[in-house]
Length: 428
Image (cartoon, rainbow, N blue to C red; front, side, top):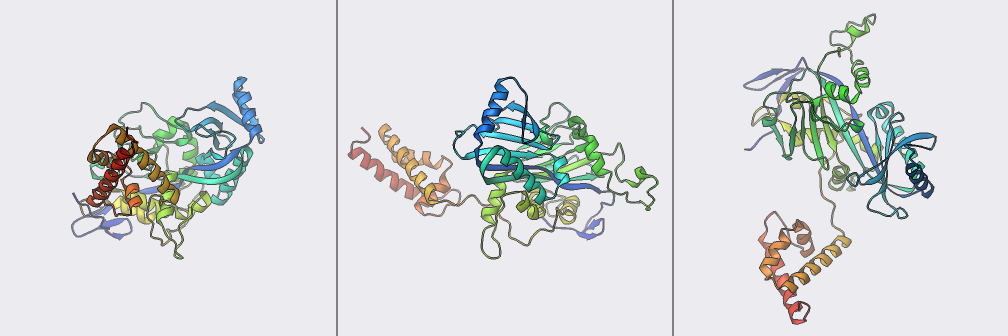
């Protein structure tokens, strides 16, 4: 089914078109902001730090003091990619140190620093970036930014998740999660709430790409013991009927104890941010550069609008839902979205990637020749490897999904190489 993304006519809180009218006067925005920042570095680990951490851990100490701060030490699994997790949530940091996939004495992606929402709320993007860099310098040298990921969110009151929410949400990513009762949660650093309330919490997309979530933030905050913090944030929003009398601060607040607050959240993996950098061009023709939180902040409004279009709630096949239109038009993170043609692209191939394709292709053909498979079978296996676009670039042909040109060029190349291997005795 083909969906359009038409916008409604709007008069304040009233949205209308030729056949319908929707009133969103009961909708209130209680918070708009950044929930999570994760900064990655390529770097060289300070040898004295790594030795001290290892000695403390081997000696049974769970607290390690470094840089004037106490850090709770835990060993991590390969799933995280890092060997040690150093945590000080009071200061607002979680440090993941020493890549599982590189030696400690080599410069590599050895460091990732995560920040809590409380710390983010206390800083500007510039000051937080400087603070993250300061923490990074405690553990590593030769620091080079390797990527930044972000979770941006809006907390709303007066929104009821419709019963047909899943059916009306058009998403390129079909991986979805819905939990109908509180059972289990991954809550570290507010990582996420996908399991609260009967049909009230949804996650769309992959954690390694762009993920979109809608969930009951009050229930999640109670579970993660962060309700006091978030209620202090929500309570700063004045009531719609506030008359200016501050003698009753409770009545002056839009948020009241017992209110339901839903969080609408977009989570951008650092690889997605990198794709925007490769695909988006500045007016001078240069590529967009986003290496840290300070450089990312001016683009958050545009990323928010992108996420709402990528995961779009439809009112009908023609019109987006009025709530989605309001979220697109009303919400701003730090500044308006720059007038840039934001696009995502995969990393452009380099000469080194061409060499890698050549080595891989040559080895594959040699191995298949030894087994004496026929060329048609070999080509079918090569085209099902997931590297079709790389092969198309290597041979200089256009590739649009299923391309006969790529098949014909590859078949001719493979047939000739296999024939030469047989004649030269390589396949013997």
